Image (cartoon, rainbow over all chains, first blue to last red; front, side, top):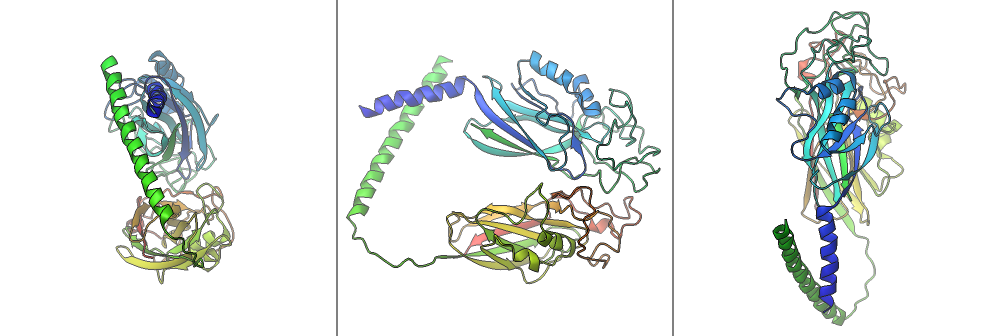
Length: 233
Length: 244
């Protein structure tokens, strides 16, 4: 019968889809007006090996990413747990309204997608996606990402050189040169020390002083802060 | 494992059987159609009519008259790109004459007037049928420097008569004027300042998402805006219904 040959071919195709690799193209777009993303990390993983989880304490690796943009510890962690990894698709900072694209081949069992990158300039703000289930059906999917606060550093909003190291208070840099200096600091404590939705930056209108080194007409944002376009091939 | 794959196989065979059956049905239909007499008629231009409602979801931002442009390939504005002068005029002053004369527009229309918070307006667009047909929308948030809302491109090629597409819209920053919020530069009723000015002095001359307004009650001392002018996404609702 004509149908039987057809059936076998189709079955083989479906079988290979369900047990072997999935090919993904992941495009991330910066939806802020005045913040850059530090090197973006995208991982495909099982239900356990996520990059972060809200309402839990940030890992040391997440803290290093959120406070200084350093994804190396998260990468080491993800490699150890056999996640599939796309690292730094923008090859550096991802500017406002800019996009970067990564190709990601997922292995069997790694059916969730996570994303993390520091929002600069912030103290410990990051754009994140936690465990988005990758659809099995081929197509293009859009996911909007929120801004998170790692809960590991007070949002004092002061630009301090060298403060990208975990535990050193301050914002390590302000790309774009719109920030001020000599602020006195917005706050000295973090009221929620778990990973949470970022309350946003305050900033001020005094570039030479005031409470904040951030500029309140440039460094604020609204959610969502990023758009992820995922193509399942 | 093996029982799962067996399940998949049997489910697939069922699916395949039904799709073969469906093919058979189609063949029958085709042959019936083939037998119908062929009548040659002069091709008539088919006109699509869209009725669009536009609702203001902000607390205290008037929205300028909604601009609607129909196009096939090139939208009048695009996120991440530099705004045209027409879009700059909308975003800085609400005036849309220049914008609506976009060279790639197949048809364009403006709502009769602007709408205040909580209000809804309606506008009708007529356009000749196209294989590929998209609609684009833009309107200014009046009490801002250069904020606008809208949708860059909505595909209505296959929208059937009587069907609707409903979307909410975020706020964009045209990137053509710094967000100083001063009385001199905000044209809306909160300030009554200047509208369009061809000088482009924003931090980057590209369309981005808007960071929100700061206001004089939240740290921008020279701002003409108060807490009532703040907004968050989304700021409007657009419903497109094909009515003809």
